[in-house]
Structures are given as structure tokens and as C-alpha cells.
Image 1 (cartoon, rainbow over the protein chains, first blue to last red):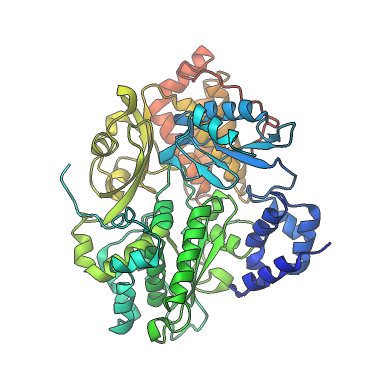
Image 2 (spheres, rainbow over the protein chains, first blue to last red):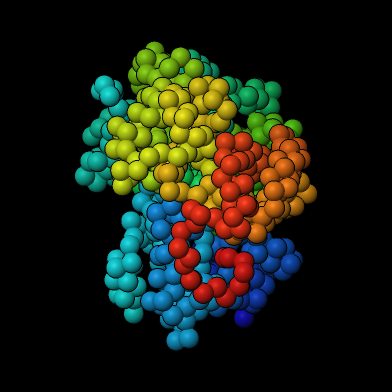
Length: 156
Length: 441
């Protein structure tokens, strides 16, 4: 397998923004992850290595450094609950426990039906609207149990 | 509190504030037009920024004009040069740049153009943290609009000034907010900070002269160019000029991002801006500028919020991210959370930081869970003194050591009580989020 033509075209355009091709690697990892349903397979890392002219281990070394890249499959929806100081002071641990109850997923795992994965994350820059979680790339702020339940309940 | 002029957030409440039409209707892009058509000389732009006294808003408070002036003479050094905008806002408590990027992206773009003109930079890269998807898409849309209007790209406004602005997405690592870590990351590598020297102005992105500026710093530039250094200096206090964006979070009635002049006291800000400590409780402590700054006890709430006054009080102005802890908050619990963060974010290059952040976290954790020993307090201090000041490639180790030393200094009694009792009397009721792994994502 190799990168789709669509991604190849995109990445060719992307790397033209920089004097060196490699600079496009992290944005490209993001795109591959989006296309693959939220994770990066070993094959995807190899394909990227080939495109960028790098050793697969170099791409692996970059992908594992950054918390936003996931190297294992996850549930259909990803709930990232901030547990840093401003959120903790406003009830983040209670929110996290409730999110786990509602979704049936443990922290760092996936619900048995494969619908939700729940993770703890560091400060998301929503400190004045704590507590919060990011659901599939959208911030939900000023949360309490019932609002969280409502938001998660609307996931298909 | 008496009324004061505002400019930073003057447009964010307008309808469609993120569009070119709104920005232009508010006088947007007139500063760069004036610079290009008058024309100004690049050194005049640097001059007015220097004269304004603008200090960087990313945490260190370094004078922005002086930083721009570090770029080598273009007549002697022909290498391409770059501006990198640090939009990796991730200091806990800090949520201000996001407001500017989401609500007023053209203001940042105009600032980039002015900065690039002043420093002869051929391109600006805006490094946005990966989680800020709305900031990214708003900025990208604004760049596209500006490009179509001849404001970004080749021969801007029909002059011979050309400048590209590119968006670049980070991927969740705090260390990439450190300027050399940011550059490594932008080059497609792990965000491992580089030893300094060489400084970015001498050898930055792709070994070329580079300046890294915070979003809010750059955002100030068009206002200074349009209104002059005198106008800017008329706000604030002599050594911290202009207004700044305050982030206030934690135990207050009205957390938020507010535009304020320097020099108000922390008490005024808590009581009059954030409408007081919540639930009618008393203040226990506050971080003046993010979790990397030493927390201060309530007895120091009359400190003025400007760079030098906060420093004189033994802490730092940082990113102006005040985190408020009320009388029911547990300092050991708070420090467990904060130490966990630095442990998670250390890049691992320097042993003092890699090992030190892990130790600090483990010790705070055991104290917070009632398993500490009295000797732990001296151990926290000696570890911190082994990590900082300036013992490592970058300041992440300092960022972990500074709040540790402050917490032990001001709240030693609270740690001692936890150790003596074998539990934290202020710990919240235990929550039971089931964990698959000990480590978090």
C-alpha cells in the first residue's frame, strides 16, 4: 500500500511552503491520521517515510514524541478531557469520572462497543471556561455532568 | 476601577470579526499600507517598536523591538530570514492568543507583515498548537482572503515587498512553545530545544536568521505603527507599556480573558475584574502568570501586575495567566497536578529535567496521597536546586522547579500536615475514573 494520490498531491503542495521537505512531516502525519480514522498504522508511517525520503524509524520517532498522534486504533469518538490545574480546580476529575460512566470507556481505553475512547490530556488552553473536553476536534467548555451527558448522548 | 482605553479586544465583539471586510472597516491593513506606501524604512519600524517599550507577551517579557534588532544586517548577510509566530499557547492557565486568532486573525496577519517588513523576512510561519483547530482554520481562511486581496504573497499592495505567511500545525507538545523546540518541530523533528548560542537571530529555522514572537506581541505591532510609541507608552507603567491580555481561571466568579493596563493590583483584578473569589470564600493563593510562575500566598495580593513588580514579589508576570485558589483548595493536590504536567512534558534531553521532573511528580504525588515523609520537603528543595536556575538546555526544568520552591516556601505547613496526618485533609472526595493504564495520553 502507498499513500493515496489525493494525499500525495496534497503533500507535494504542502512541502512547497518550506525550504526543506521534511518540514511538512508533522502536518502530513496529522492528515494521515485524519484519513485513517484517528490513528497511524505502521504502514502509514512507512508510506510517509517513503514520501519524505526518511527511514521509517525517524518517522516513528517523531510520531511517538507528540501526544496528538495515536499508534493504535481508537473508538469512533475520541473524548479528550483536560486534567490540568485550571480544569482540576473546577471539577475536571468529577467530569472525567462521569464521562467514563456515560461512555463505558476507561481512561486510556475504548468502550466495549467501540464507540468511545477517553483520554486525559494536558492543558488545552480553555482555562477560563473550565472544565472542558475536546470531542472529535471540537471544544466543549464550561461543562457540568448534565451538559457532558447531553453532548456525548448526541454522538452517533 | 477607572476607565482605560482598550485596543487589543476592540474588534472581537463585532459581527464577523474574523473576516477581511470587518477588519478593513475598522481601519485594518492601514498600518502596513502606510509602511509600504510612505514608505517607511525597515529600521524605522524597528525603531518605533523599540521606542514603544513593547515587551514580549509569551512569558519572558523580553523587549520585542530589541529582539527584532538582533537580526543580522541584510547588506552583510544574504541568507533568507524568517519570522516564526509562536501560537503554541500551552502554559497552563493561558488562553489568550486563542481569542485573538479565533476572533481577529487579520490583526495577527497584519502584524506578521509589519514584522517581516522590519526584519526583511521572506516568510512567516504561524506555529499553532494542534488542538487549536478553530484558530487554525480561521487563520488559514484569513490568509486566503488576504492573499486574494493582494495583501499576502508577491508584490503586496503593488509594491516590491513580498511576503508569504504559512500555517503550521503542532501536535500537542508543550516543549514546542520553547522557541528552539518550536523551530525543531517546524523542521519536522521531535521538539528538542537547541543549546543557545547560537541564538535564533544568528541561526534559526534551516540555519537562517529567525525571530520567534508570541501572537499577542505581533498583534500589538500594527497598533504601535499606526498610533505611535508615545500613545503606547501612555498606557501601563514605565517599564511595562501598553495593555495586555489577562487570563484568569480557577476559583473566581468570572473567569475570562480581559484586556487590562499594567499596574493594577492582583486584588483589583480578582475583585473587580473577575468579580471576586467564588462561593464567598477567601483567597488562599494565586499563580500570577501561569503554572510555571511561583505561586503567591493571599497575603501578597496587593502586588501590582506588571513585569517588575511581580518579579520583586518573588514570582514572574509570565503569560499573565492568573490561576486562583480559594481557601478550600489543597496546595499538595495542586502541586501534584502541576508536577505531573512537567513530568509529562519534559523532552528528556537533559538528565536534570528528565529525572528531576519525574522525581518532583512522584514526591508531590505521595505527599498528596498521604504517603509522604518529612524529609521529602527538603528533597523537593534540593532536587529543584539541582534543576535550576539555568542548568539545562531550556527553561522547562526551571518551570518545574520554580513553583515547587514557591509552594514549599509559602505552604510548608500544609505539606507537613498531610505528612503528619497520613492524608490530605483538603483533598476532594475521591473520584473513580477507571484507568486502563497508569500513564495518561
